[in-house]
Length: 253
Image (cartoon, rainbow, N blue to C red; front, side):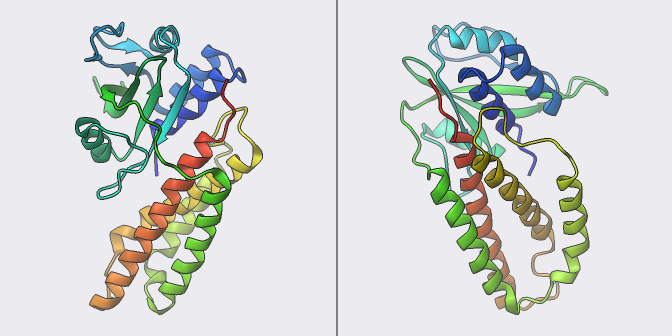
């Protein structure tokens, strides 16, 4: 699971809470995804009229009472982390991620897309949307961690009779090994150790879901295929909730 939204939320919140400076936060985000531009904001008095570099955008948003970044990881049929309206939800569900930006008098949704302007330029373009002024219903970190563990146990039990593990295990193990050796933490400075632990575990399990999904049903009966699909769906939902909870687990002023 390669998330463009997660670094912006993690380092944005670390900046807001005083654990890193603005330049360090922007550098950390753009090391992962390339240059970030905030697109035209269709929100009347907000000070954006064209693509704005991330650093400039954050300064302008801070002047409008920016106080929190919230990660949204929705899926089809599960708009987790979103608050509406429909236009924002639709865009974020299609992207499978997004960010809610809390300002003093409103909330804005940002949805990322790859920004490719030539053979060598790779960055991120953020499309802004009006967001309803509500806090999404998300689990706290201890509950999300508990649910992730319980779901993993339940899924393992459900899949005992689904004998297709050998078909994708080598790719999974290679990917998990690469992930474990990256040395790049998913979260930023200022997050508690538990949040780092949960985020790392969720990221590894997300990779399992990602690599297992393309082989769903290979050599299986219809019943086994459905059982496997349901199990992966449960694990994916628990992973997304754990990641959102981990990214919210920082004290903001």
